[in-house]
Length: 402
Image 1: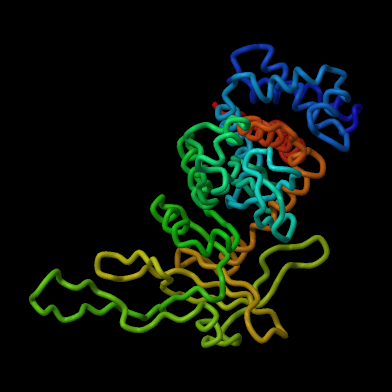
Image 2 (image 1 turned 90 degrees about the horizontal axis):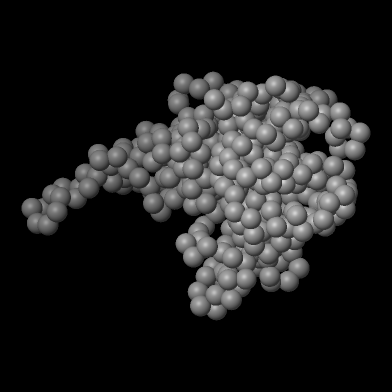
């Protein structure tokens, strides 16, 4: 925002900052939080602390101290932002995703040579895992976690961990586990998704799916064609008990086949055309095959009688293609209309708008600090700036949490 534009919404921004930073007991911390927020919103190429301080006309040490050495409850601020985001966005789904933060050197917390979808290759970067609330018209992050690769554990990483002030209880955990941790944190403040969506990095992970099922969460996750499943009419068989040892458990006798094979056997002609969204120029539509299957894999979770629950297999098979181009799996009810099922599975697209605005306009990946806590504070405050803009576009008077 230009200086004049920021001045025009100053009253709204002060009201927003007053509510968001209310958990900060000290007045000077609340003032510095509001200052950092203005710095992120104010137009400028770089949103690291020194350039922001120059545009704000303050000593950058004030921002530095607030982000790195000051003690303030980032979790409480994040909770207030999450409640406001849900009120503003009115989400149909929550989206789990991750994004890369390209870095030079080895000093930033969590930095390593690792694959980043942002780079489209393996590169030197940090990875942030995020949970977003999304609807067709708006979206906003709800929580963030910095991924720590395995190279940041162990005695050889002790020096780097100390310099980055990584807490002793923070260690390498897979991205899917960080996502579940954030869902638990949000559930702890009374927020749960109606449906959760994610790409194949999460959808193909059985532990992540089981974690969602254990929490009673509905999902529509992108899947890989080679994942396996049994047909809907497959039934487990109990082997004959020979009288020795424990009784055998029921199991499926037939081999599961790939999701691709299920759809190919059903043929494209068994599908239907579905329009899931009205685009700015044309409706978004394609041909889909929808099947009921029992997802197998290496770690299925059958019921006591050996039955694997039925779920949806969704395959996008456009005209002119010899086979499907995308797959999803879902535990949504069998009665859900095809249009709604496809629309929910396809709803991850919205957060690409988040990442674009968070990075290009608000400096999500501009943080140059070296502390683990500083990184989480920065992404939380960038989220606050993004939410403020979202509220101005959607519902300028979004209610705060009671």
